[in-house]
Image (cartoon, rainbow, N blue to C red; front, side, top):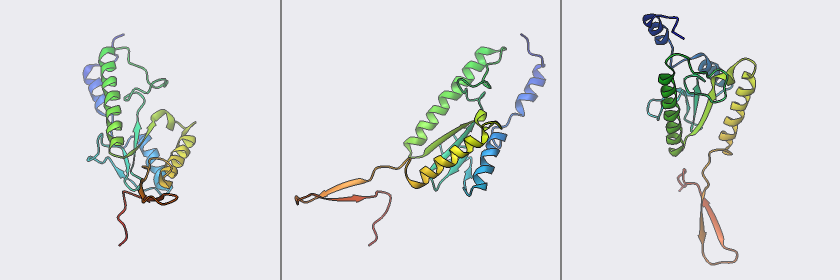
Amino acid sequence: MPDKLSPEQRHKCMSHIRGKDTRPEMIVRRYLFAHGYRYRLHEMRLPGTPDIVMRRLHTVIMVNGCFWHGHEGCRYFVLPRTNTDFWRAKIERNKARDAEQRTELRAKGWNVIQIWECELKPSVRQATLQRLTYTLSRIELGIIGRKKPKTYDFGEGEPPMRMVADESREPNL
């Protein structure tokens, strides 16, 4: 099936698709701000330039479009009928890059939350945002994403004396 738009019209249409400040991203940002969470936007020093960075919680939030990031099983992810090979390769590259960036962020100790565009549709938006708040509160309390503390054994006494040290803090001397 041929494209209904001329190449010039298609180029103009595609050039107006934004990568930052998208509607789904703005929904998440407004919700977080209204609930007292503060964040940075598009931190270029982190792999993948995450949409929302919460440094205090050591958490990044990626708000992904279902089409551009290949959300499997989503009704909004349908490959175009024209130039299918190009789109399949492009979306596969996007998915591979996303996975690599998430792995790199986790290796650096960041918590990564991924929210899909379809999860912010009006019918399921409130449930998604409440799950986000729940997850962030669990991160804040240290239930998720916390490293296990180092343990040290001292002496041969009965029972062995154990001390725990948190690597992230300096001792008060």
